[in-house]
Length: 518
Image (cartoon, rainbow, N blue to C red; front, side, top):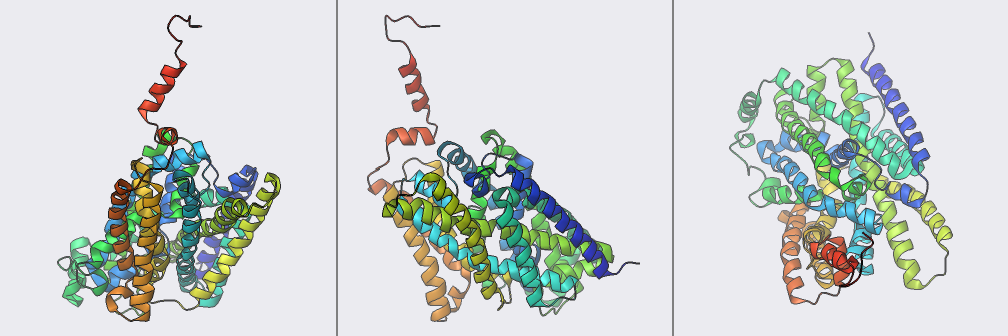
């Protein structure tokens, strides 16, 4: 009978072999810089839907979020409720993101802001804030190491280094095509993982009612009647993480994937795939946390509750698959983060901002080559920065990730939403709203929380949610109070306004007295 380590090695070799094949296919599909950065309009709804879901759900969804429910009970599910809001946020923005990639050649979310508002400042500022996602990458590394150390005899340090090395290698080689292909396959692994965890919970404890009774017997504040039973999920912090997580859906590594969808008409089917995916992840979080607590109370590391639950209910072959699937989940998100941060520096800051601003005379082919090399180099640099952060892991992976997620969400998600649905947003309003949202999150967490020790502000999503709300309200008010500087014909084109098509029809008609070729 094969041991756990044997099964893990077998699944691990199969998984790595699959990554190798997909990365090879990706290199064959990559024909230029834009292919490497975005893989524009290249994939259908199943591929993009699975990639979006897998990139959204990672160490947090498979380890950290069940760990929150394990520690705080049902109040931790405020995080899970945000999964539904994520799909709504995608529905609002996906059409416009796909259009901008196709019509204006946007290569990233900072590039979207730069072109949507014709603002080099917004492109540069959003690219800089994107680099805060190094904290998110660090959380992925920590999660990968937890999975590796639970399933193999490797140490935490070796687990981090191996996980980081594999991810860096295939993203540097295959770029966006490798990210999307591998993330989609990893998403399929994650769906199977979700079903296994839910089945393990039902087999070990019973239905949701039995799980609730088991955790209430340990601590009444963990039950379904205590939705605000922990400081992290108080009457403000609970709804705050619901809002912040829902709008996390519009962070750069996720928004960029909609630019790879082959046809705007397929957005609705992609949304359906992502909805199914997020529903399964909701079940994984709830059952993994509650049933994990019922089966193994008193864990020193709550983030391993999912692994403990499966190990108690399933044979080694299934447990080994779960470990590899968790590693796959972590890789899918980390690959997107690496590429997003690298693009922010090499493409958005260097190629599209510094070179034009400084008036450097660089021909297009040379600039593309420099950007291509720079993107690969930045992937390695971001890995080193994130490794330094990850070597001192927090009690909860989710908290570490939100330091980076919160900064971008507070600054740019409101203007992305308003900018996608309303042509009246002015560049001035967008700039001010972004600065205010970013300042609220950053001053709140790093200033009031970490420096001054104010307990309420040590929760990273508190400042993010407050920044999102203020910025979301401020953006339309400032737009109404400031002058629109964008050309009307430009707005007609990007919003596909009917009067634009009507005016073209009138222009194309023969004048009175003329004879049409028809």
